[in-house]
Image (cartoon, rainbow, N blue to C red; front, side):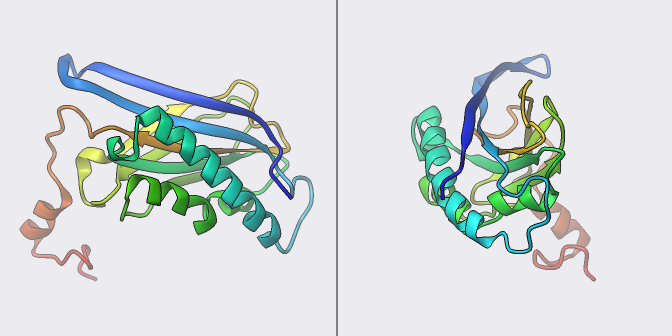
Length: 199
């Protein structure tokens, strides 16, 4: 049992001027999207595990290899994330199933040497739906400079019986970030890192 992949789409953005000011170095955000036939489309399936376990490693390894090639190496990636968009004959649970498994995400984590969890979205949409890939620092979840979002779309995907599975990355944070990190907020409020709302 292997995923039926109709197409693979690459998105690559290089920013040279941000906020009317040149960047010190080009700021790249990029993504790889696999358009996959939804094995559960059009019906309710109680047990999603067989397909998740079969598809996860195949997609995770293939897409990670492409991301590392785009980056020029895992060390070049500072922020990372994932997303999935399911077509109208599927459930958001189907999108979640393909990206929320360590059999998928661990390939990427290991390749970039990450400690943070992968930021994510899982949504439903038609062809050309916005694909939003949230990113965060691969090692420091409180580093706000790396809170980013890649946005793009694929004109013919997802079809009703497809899922678009995406990995995203950035080579750095926002070029002129100046809002600080969450640690200063916690210090100012007198709150603990593990309980930021003090509840």
